[in-house]
Structures are given as C-alpha cells and as structure tokens.
Length: 301
Image (tube, rainbow, N blue to C red):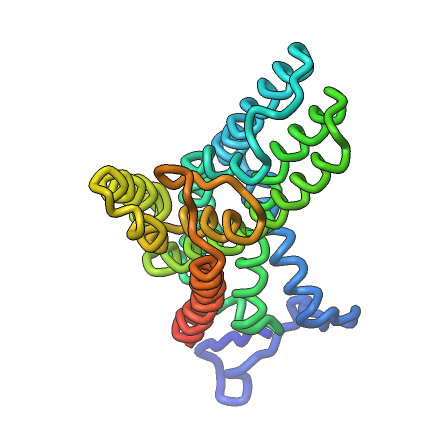
C-alpha cells in the first residue's frame, strides 16, 4: 500500500492508492522444502553449477585433477595385466589430501562467507527456515560435494580393476572400505571447513585458515612423526597422528578397515589406539556441528 500526503484541505490530506499488490494464495511448502532447496542450491554451488563460468573453473579442475591419477593407474593395470592395483582404495584419499584440502578451502568459504559478508543470514531466518535447517543444509551440501569428489576416483579404480579381471570379491571389499573411509573424511573435513569459514566474512582469510588447518597441519604432523620414528620413539608416532585431520582418518581406517598406514614405518595405531582415533573423529564432527549451531544462533539475532 502507498500513502500520499499533500498540502490540500484537511479533509483531503490523505489518499490511498491501489498499486496492485496481491496476496499469495498458492501452496505453502514449509521448512522441509526450504531446507531441501537450500541443500540443493548449496550442493550445486559447490561445483559452480548455476553460477558464472569463472566459478566453475576451480572445482571442476580439482575434480579432474583428483581423477586423472586413478585413470592412469587403471590404464597401467589393464595394459600390464597387473594382479593388483598400484594403490589401495583406502590410500587414495590420503595421497590426494592436498587436492581435497584445496577443494574444502575454496568451497567452504564460498558456501557461508558471502552470506555473512552481505548479512543475508537474518533474511533466511525471517522465512520458515530456522537455524538448524540452515546449518544442516550447508553441512550436508559440503559433505555431499566432498563425498562426490573423493568417491569418483574410487569408482574409476573399481571399474578399472574389474576390466583388468582382478578378483571381484577382493576389489568389492576394498571398494566398500574406501567408501566408508571417504564418507568419514567428508563429514570431518566439511565440518572443520565450515566452522573456520563461518568465523570471518572475508573469503580470502577463510581460504588461508582452512588450508592451514587441513593441509599444513598434515605436513607438520608427518614431519614430526618422521623425526620421532628416526629417533627411535616409534611409540609416539600413533599419538602424534591425533593432531591432523587426514592422519586421524588414516589412523581410523588402519585400525578398523585393514588399510595400510601412511605413518612412518607403516605402523598405524593399534585397535585400542584406533578407538581413541574414532572417538576424536566423531567428537570433531559433533563439535563442528555444535559450533556452527551456536555461531548461527548469534548471527541470526
């Protein structure tokens, strides 16, 4: 409605004009639909879909980069009639951790930093959507995008292994173990990436912080582990692995999925130590979710 005031006689000072506003009489789809829409939009945005060409370049490039080594391994295995793949399914994500970390660093801030920078989060909460819906949709979207990224090369390896006529049961078992590993990795990395990204509306700061937390920490922990191993302190090596996200995943899959450890000497955590690793990983995932909820309750006020 519009109100027009003019310097006219007292009886005609206020006029009401009908400028065509109409009530919405269609269906109201509610929170569940809004949550699914936000999840779908965020997942598509993680690969630049529905956005500018410039936004598609990096995620698509990283997707290709992480798949190319798997294609090469498959080609070599088929051509040489190898009896096993060069790399286990559970080892592939550890080897490509730098690519995965760079993907999280680029897409984590893209998912949440712009909402913080342009102060659009309260607008989400002015609709049926609530804090828990926003956090769940963003978390699930980034975790799903990471799962797609890390599963694609495993599928390439699995299909290639079958084409190379490797043992079906062994390859299926290894592929299943790899899926469990990358699912856990996706949840952990997505949580850490979103928590760090939600702290600052500056995308550049978020990218640097995520790289430091995921990639640089792995290099630092691996270096300290190597030093401890060379100094005959091999008992400390498994405990040092608790201080980096990728070594946490390595420890869990070594203890429970029969994976070969990337730790110095190839000796990962024991079953007892693996329980500690698993508790820490699950605690970080739950803690990340809790921190995001607390953060967005404050932002939405």
